[in-house]
Image 1 (cartoon, rainbow, N blue to C red):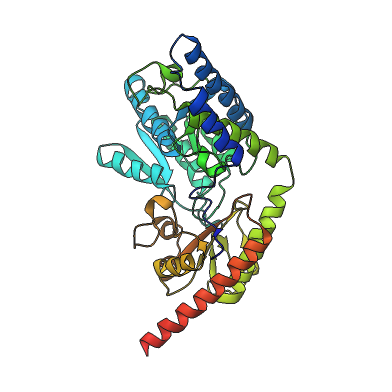
Image 2 (cartoon, rainbow, N blue to C red):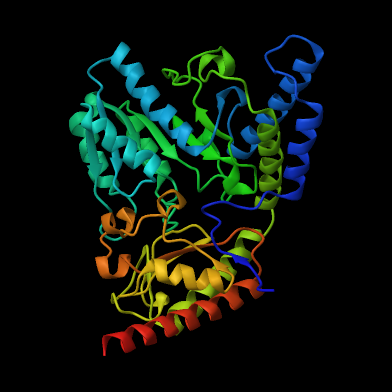
Length: 409
């Protein structure tokens, strides 16, 4: 039987056993409607509030500042649409949305759609020295010139394809200085690195349980207590009238357990160990294939050693490696047959044969973007799995290049 090595954690993570147990227990014991006033409803409501406390502790915010959603995409839509509609009704001069072209599709494609319907969208450029991180000097200039017209700035904290981190603390401070609301898609960040939203100038932040060993179908939106949104799910008073609909009690209970486990893990040396696994894997693959790591700056685009340049800050778990003049689909199929699971970018876009728009927006050459693979670890990935996967990747790339060369002759 082929050993399976899951290196697609940015797409999803395996629910922790404790999480699965909490979900099943809630299905069996806490199935009442949390809006009902009887004892069964009260028990379901108690499970929701216990989970809210755990997630709030992980994120570093007040419990009342969390809104349950179905996941990161809904959280992001609520933040952006909710803000634009709120200002349209109360302060119509604020109509501009500011973001980047290397956001997750939940932001990028929503912004594109809003632009077709009259919303002015300003796309920030990538930082010249930190590919895939927004140019915050350009943001500062924009805020100084048009701060009173901007409804929302939305910047992701950690890029889902490359792991590149944005200086959210500075971005939030710039927005606060000019009285502009700031949202961060923190879906890939929460649970992987410490967060303390109470100490930061972030007004809204999205997250999702299944990125941190929780269940799918549940997420949360952090809403600073002074921020008002126009609800997008209409049909009930749930979540303080910010998101109507009966709450998904089993998934929320599982999210609470996942949050407690993540907070405990962040207090250990697990991140250092896991980053060591990522670095060893990345080094072995680049050395063995001549691949290019996207999201770090190297001395030469053809460098065979990722350490030849200066790395921009990335999540400890993510590496995106481009294999020039190969097709990502062929690489992924071969890796999957050999038990290594990875992706060509965001899972919701993996069916496309086009190169990642995120990588192209970062300035990655099309011939590299076409053959770029995202490898993302979770906190359970072992060093032995990383070494085994690296050997398989190197052998797979070598074989594909040989077959491609033979076909060209």
